[in-house]
Structures are given as C-alpha cells and as structure tokens.
Image (cartoon, rainbow, N blue to C red; front, side, top):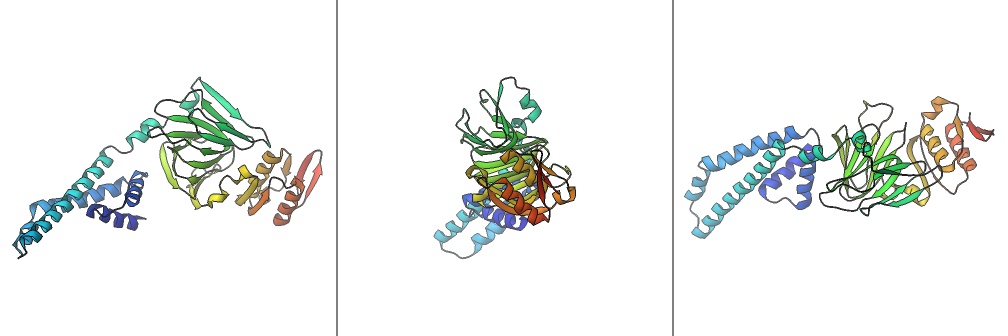
Length: 331
C-alpha cells in the first residue's frame, strides 16, 4: 500500500493526480498511525521547495539558449510545479498539526449516548424482522432478536444510535452531519451517507459490511479501518487483543437475510446454531463444544425447514440430532 501511496503522492505534487487518487491519499492519511508517513513526506517536500527557491536551477534554465516564448513557458511551468508543492506542503502540515480534530470531538462513547433521557427503542423478537424509517430519512432493517436505540430527535451536528443485534442501514446523506452507530465493546461506525450491514450480537464476533459508499469503524475512538464497497471487517468478541480481520465480500451477499437468504460463509458451527435459533425461534442444544468451533461455509433459505437444515449441518460435521422435549439436541 505504501508503494502505491508514494506513486500517488508524486502525481499529487506534479499536479497530475485525479480526484479519486487524491481521495485515496486523504483516506490513507486519515487512518490511525500514518502521521509518521505524513511527516516524512513533509520533510521531503520542504527540501524540494527549498532547493527550488534557493539553488541556481532556475538560472541554469534561463542560461540555455531557448526562444523567448519557450523560455517563459519553462519558467512558468517551474513556478507552477513549485506552487503545487507548496500547496501540498500546507495540506500535510495542517494534517499533522490538527490530526482528526473533528473525529475525536464528534464521536462520543456509547455510555455517553445512552445517558440521554430522550431515547426510544425499536426491537424485534425471534423470527421477526422490522423496517424502520428514522426522522432524518435513514432506513433501517432490523434482523431477528435485535434492538435499535434512537433519540426522539437527532442533534444538529451528529446522528447517533445504539445497535444490539444485526441491522442493515441505508443512511440518508447529510453533509457535515455524521451518522454514528454505537455497538458493544466500545466499537462505533461512522458515515455520512451509505448502505451497509452491522452484526453485533452479544457474545458473537462483530462485523461491518459495506454495500454502497464508505464507512469508518472505530474502537475506543481509535480508527480500525475505513471500508469501501465490498469490504468487511470482523472483530473478535472472544479475544479482545486479536487484530480485526479485513476481508472481501460479494455485494449481493451483504444483508442477504433481508431477502430470506441464510449465508454462512466461513462461520463457526456454534454461531450458525445461534443464528438458526433466532431465525426459527427454536431451542437447539450443541453438546459437543469442539464441534462448535468448526468453520463451515453453507447457504440456506429461510423457507427451508429447520429439520432439513439440521440434517445438512450434521452431515457436514459428522454429527446427528434428536428432538426431545421441544428442543433439538446435536450429539
């Protein structure tokens, strides 16, 4: 990644950088831990600008026998390149002096948000789903056994909610008014306007998947990742010291549950069982803990019968199940 940024940085200084390339550079600089790179580039630019003003390069250019019109063009291009370098120099300097000022001041903690007295909760039961339209026009689809805590009215400078469970958000764009979703374990997701899925059930690994736009995921006000379309971040709930995992996902697979799909790509068997319990409102007991740690990739539809689904899962894990006292038991 650093090599690519080096190339884009040279294009930025030369004035040949496109808008999309400029955005890549800015996103890279905004990520936590890249201040050192910015400082290094600042030193390199300072030397280049210093040489442009205080060496005899310009005199050498003027001493070459060139027609007057062309000489003026060369001198103009030299000054233009130097001016571009100065602009980049100023941008980097401001980035270092005022790093992430808006982000740290605008993102409160979940505990701070939940102290707000004017909060309401929207929730779903097992095997239930709900579509919600918030006061700003943002649309939310709540998956089964999930809850969304929202204020009666959003603040003027930020829009905050708290999610427990899973939901798909289609956030209404509002320039300079970020939309912040708080979840457990001090994780928050910050956007302006985009569509994405967040899964944050108690006791299970958390994930954020982007279908449209770009989102920023933070933990304890530290940026974990800036995700674009087709990217997903997974955060372990069992090992808090583990580094987040960034993976690619198919856009059509994101929040497939809204259309009835049950896609378990690289899921732990125990997590699949928990999801089935929510979706079918049934009791399932997994007696073999070791089997619960197995990683499985399989897909079903919510129209499939639970008995058929369990038969497939037992075949994949070399187990079997019985039905006793209104509960499925996997041996």
